[in-house]
Amino acid sequence: MPLGSNFSWYGFVVLLIVGLFTEKYAVRLGRGQEVSASFLAYFLSAALVGPLASFVAAVASQIPHARRHGIERTASYAAAAGIVSGATGLFYVGLLHEFNGPTNTPAVAVAAIGLAAGVLFQGINYAVFIPVGWLRTGLRPGTIWLEGFQPFLPFHFFFLAISLGLIYIYRLYVLRPGGVSMVYSTLLIVLCLLPVLGLIYAFRAFAHERELSRHNAALALRNERLFLQAVKSQVTALDVKDNYTARHSAAVALWATDIAQAMALSKHEQNITHLASLVHDVGKIGVPDEVLNFPGRITGEAWSLIEAHCQNGHKILKTIDQFGELAEVILYHHERYDGSGYPVGLVGEAIPLISRIICVADSYSAMVSDRPYRKALSTEVAQGELRTHAGRQFDPVVVDYFLKVLAEHDLAYQRGELADFDLEFSSDRFLRELPAEPVEEEPGLAAPVPNS
Image 1 (cartoon, helix red, strand yellow):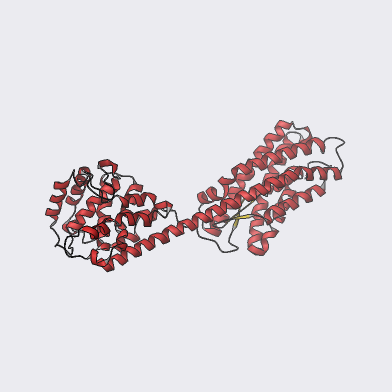
Image 2: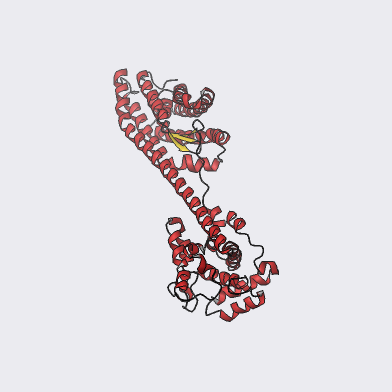
């Protein structure tokens, strides 16, 4: 039902073309979603012509998707878009006629009705397309809202404001008695839509940049995971050379993480502790085999090579921004509480807490393990050494917590016999803390959510 006898059907064609244009150049967001600026054409068609025109505009504008989505899928999307637009048109027209029609309703009331209709459009749009997106892509409603709706809310309001402005101009110049001719009303619509094209371009550019940023983040995340796998391979290679590193690292990870948990560190700090413990000796990849497996006490130049493994591990890990904290922990894990450690001689709490935790677990593991230069110490002797050197080599608070942890477990735990490097690495908490890599959808799987 047209809202005025002076309505330009040519103008409706212009709005239909705008709808086709915006849908043809919809931006793919990945994870099975697309976004377009078609709200403007649908809403204006509903306001200026009526529900049927809005329904037709919404359905017809889905035609550009037919080649990519297929006839059946396009028909389902067209029906959903038609329902959203037609229902909004019915609401707008029905409420407007309750206020004596478009020409007699005060401008403030027209704006309020238009605002309510715009909000209703987005609400119905969300309600209709959420199940479509869920069934088609498996994305949860909250994910669809956060990725497909929420980021574009500012554009929703811009398009709604522009639509209300165009409706007011149409009401002022076209619907008034003796209004302009069909040709002039069409030109008026075209002129009003020209700046809108710029906003549509900005909308498309924003959506494209957002998707590009998401894609780059996914690539960075994939690189981080690959990098960690490479570090794991280096530790495994060290184990082949030393036949000690992997199991030792797994035991240190087990104990250090339990210490961090007992000390009530945050989940993130516990995760950093776990991963740092697993790879704390990765810098030894540059130490010659004859030094690693030397049967006596190492001194002189050979000891300098051993000491350098902290800096080497730091250099390996700091190349990835995500691992800056991890690299720092590994750099200082051989610092001593009294300042006599290496590589720089930090004292007390100037040493990162996680480094102090790993230092205790690392030293205890070395004591209860067989080494080329001596046999393993008993757990009682090793724990006695921790008490003796607490406050000098070790943080006394960390030692207290570790001894309590050990006392709560059996001998197999205390000797690290149950530690398995591959198992610890595959269950690494820091890896689980990283966001899941977005799955790239195959062509044709995207659902048009939302019509902004």
